[in-house]
Amino acid sequence: MLMIQNRKKMRFFTVKVALCCVVVMLLTLSDAQLDNSFYKDTCPRVHSIVREVVRNVSKSDPRILASLIRLHFHDCFVQGCDASILLNDTATIVSEQSAPPNNNSIRGLDVVNQIKTAVENACPGIVSCADILALAAEISSVLAHGPDWKVPLGRRDSLNSSFSLALQNLPGFNFTLDQLKSTFDRQGLNTTDLVALSGAHTIGRSQCRFFAHRIYNFSGNGNSDPTLNTTLSQALRAICPNGGPGTNLTNLDLTTPDRFDSNYYSNLQLQNGLLRSDQVLFSTSGAETIAIVNSFGSNQTLFYEHFKVSMIKMSIIEVLTGSQGEIRKHCNFVNGDSSNLATLATKKSSEDGMVSSI
Ligand SMILES: *[C@@H]1O[C@H](CO)[C@@H](O)[C@H](O)[C@H]1NC(C)=O
Ligand SMILES: *[C@@H]1O[C@H](CO)[C@@H](O)[C@H](O)[C@H]1NC(C)=O
Ligand SMILES: *[C@@H]1O[C@H](CO)[C@@H](O)[C@H](O)[C@H]1NC(C)=O
Ligand SMILES: *[C@@H]1O[C@H](CO)[C@@H](O)[C@H](O)[C@H]1NC(C)=O
Ligand SMILES: *[C@@H]1O[C@H](CO)[C@@H](O)[C@H](O)[C@H]1NC(C)=O
Ligand SMILES: *[C@@H]1O[C@H](CO)[C@@H](O)[C@H](O)[C@H]1NC(C)=O
Ligand SMILES: *[C@@H]1O[C@H](CO)[C@@H](O)[C@H](O)[C@H]1NC(C)=O
Ligand SMILES: *[C@@H]1O[C@H](CO)[C@@H](O)[C@H](O)[C@H]1NC(C)=O
Ligand SMILES: *[C@@H]1O[C@H](CO)[C@@H](O)[C@H](O)[C@H]1NC(C)=O
Ligand SMILES: *[C@@H]1O[C@H](CO)[C@@H](O)[C@H](O)[C@H]1NC(C)=O
Image (cartoon, rainbow, N blue to C red; front, side, top):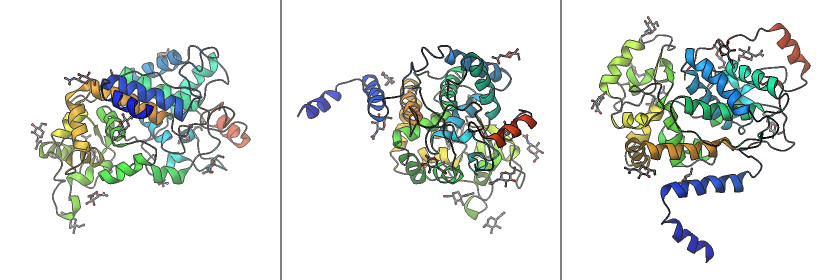
């Protein structure tokens, strides 16, 4: 009875209040142990330390902001937000980094290591690599002029990673809407979350190999993808030669490539989504995502509000807390793995050297 009354009342709440309730519910029901002020006493400056490094790097590499958001996302979808994506190949670990959705496309591993060093200098052994990824994602949104939110903290780092889950759980660039929906559903994220989180493609780049199939001989009839704007298709042919290596880059948001705004959605309305997995949100006939794209495209505030909620929801997927996992000393290795210490001693911490997708 009480619940029914509450539900009726809910209808009279503004969208804003309703969204706040969702955040509170998520934090209290799904994971009471994460807390925005988790490092209040043990590492009070952690947010500004992370921010300083990311801001610094972004001056010469604006694309890093998208790369760091993607890194957090690709971490969370594979056995939860536990920094499993950061673990390198070793004798016992088959890294997620080389799984096809990540191989030669994830970026920013070196920047995360830079952040970790700065954080360790200030508060040794306190802050997890998984929390660094969550903070870096929020900070990247803000630095790209997007929304900010209170990042729940207190995650711990995994002791393993999963190549096979990376292959299974991460969305593909050519996914249909149904495939995207089930990929997100598997993580407890609904259709609104799917549309909101896809909006992160308002910044960043993609390699030709992820969309070239749309401009040359799509579905074997010699034509380009009918849901791709013909003007954009022409422009993309110039950037991505047919049969080329597919490593050239272009902007995911063709109107405001480095600004975190709602143009991603207005692009979709003009068939200007770069990836097939972007455009299907608007071009799948009869889909409930069309109305959501339209609402976010016409109201950036609404997009921001949903993006924040969905990012927080994503950031608490299957987290390790309390005494689970560990706080890694080096984000690329599990603590106390002596074979890795040898690797570290001989290996210069150089650029990740990977050609990247986003
Ligand atoms: C930021 O960059 C400057 C110049 O490249 C460097 O001196 C400084 O140490 C950097 N700060 C951080 C926090 O990385
Ligand atoms: C990852 O990419 C490299 C080329 O850079 C390739 O040699 C390797 O086979 C790829 N790994 C997987 C698992 O696909
Ligand atoms: C990683 O560790 C967790 C917790 O011990 C376990 O449930 C999972 O099966 C492990 N995954 C792999 C790929 O070993
Ligand atoms: C992408 O999907 C379309 C339609 O679902 C299909 O015709 C095409 O062959 C796919 N292309 C690739 C590269 O997977
Ligand atoms: C397009 O793809 C079809 C089916 O794979 C193939 O038969 C045809 O030769 C291709 N056409 C061109 C122009 O590449
Ligand atoms: C894309 O790559 C090709 C080589 O495959 C190169 O010739 C071309 O200039 C590049 N285009 C752009 C726009 O960078
Ligand atoms: C293609 O994009 C241009 C702007 O880039 C726009 O003017 C045009 O209406 C779009 N075409 C379609 C079919 O949406
Ligand atoms: C846009 O969305 C916000 C947040 O939900 C709402 O408060 C505002 O009224 C909306 N603006 C318009 C013009 O609909
Ligand atoms: C999906 O989740 C969002 C919170 O991320 C919530 O606001 C919305 O009501 C949910 N939609 C459905 C259809 O359950
Ligand atoms: C971890 O692997 C990446 C490539 O995936 C490499 O660039 C990096 O140097 C490695 N890290 C360390 C500390 O060896």
